[in-house]
Image 1 (spheres, rainbow, N blue to C red):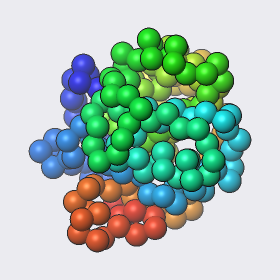
Image 2: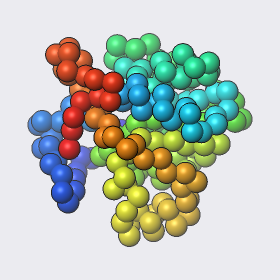
Image 3: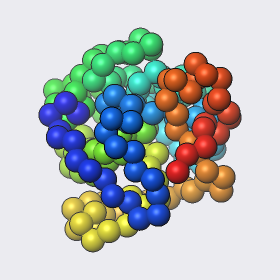
Amino acid sequence: LHKMTRRTINTLGSTTLNHADREDMDFYQTPDFATQTLLHHLLFPETIWEPMAGNGAISKILVKNGFNVISTDIVERKFKLNATLDYFDSETFLTQLPDAFSIITNPPYEFANEFLKYTLTKIRPLQCCVFLPVRYLEGQQRYNEIYSQFKPSKVLMYVKRLGCYKQADVEAGVVTERGVGSA
């Protein structure tokens, strides 16, 4: 992610934080409920790569449910990673993965398009599951660059909003089962 340049994101109908208010490296944790619910709807091979593992929120739930999880990220936080690497330079890391693996992650929204394009064209996992706002299914540019070639096989929507959260929210004790209320 360090090779990507930051850009402004304008989204109709929501509040967009300026870069000074955003978490470093766009790091927001995924509520346990989000991962746990996903497991009830999809089938995965035994090995799952979590390439943007952060503090291990997704990885810990997957391990608890019996999956072999390979956790990586660009920096190591308060969670022991299998490797520290820049996802956009990870093609050589693929030799350490089994032939059949899935990716489950909550990519930084700022780089979601780049993440999807890179994953689907270069990494090519058996299955890729990403936590993204529904607005990431819209748009002519996304269609031209991603969805015209790679159509989603399933789209799962949460009935109640999930709120990804900052580490400061954890320390303040304001995180609920569904995260923290957010726009």
